Amino acid sequence: MSRAKLTEQEIEGSLAALNASATSPWRIIDGKLHKEFQFRDFSEAFGFMARAALAAESMDHHPEWLNVYKTVRVDLATHDAGGITELDFRLAGRMEAIAG
Ligand code: H2B
Image 1: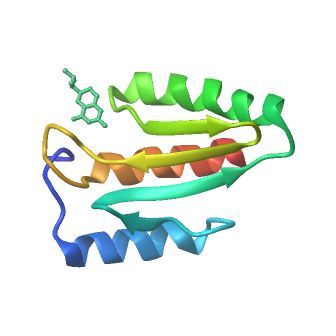
Image 2: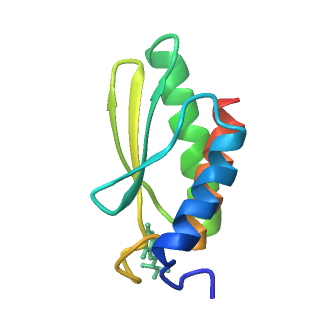
């Protein structure tokens, strides 16, 4: 069920809930849940990625992401569903907690 593609209305609701506690907002870009995290330096950015990777693996749900020095660009979508699902919002929430 958590891998069922969400409707636009469901996405808007989940996005508002996620952003209520996020330091900078997640947005929908090209049908994916997108955020650009900024850290103090490369070490912090890579530390975040290491912890997020373990969380992603434990969820069997994996991010598309790109690291350039202290920036980590994240795009979340569920490839099996061809869109955004509850799993993407769960992983985004875990990433927020990790980036803390
Ligand atoms: N991650 C993401 N983001 N989308 C998926 O559809 C997906 C995944 N599918 N991780 C999982 C792995 C699937 O391939 C395995 C077999 O459970």
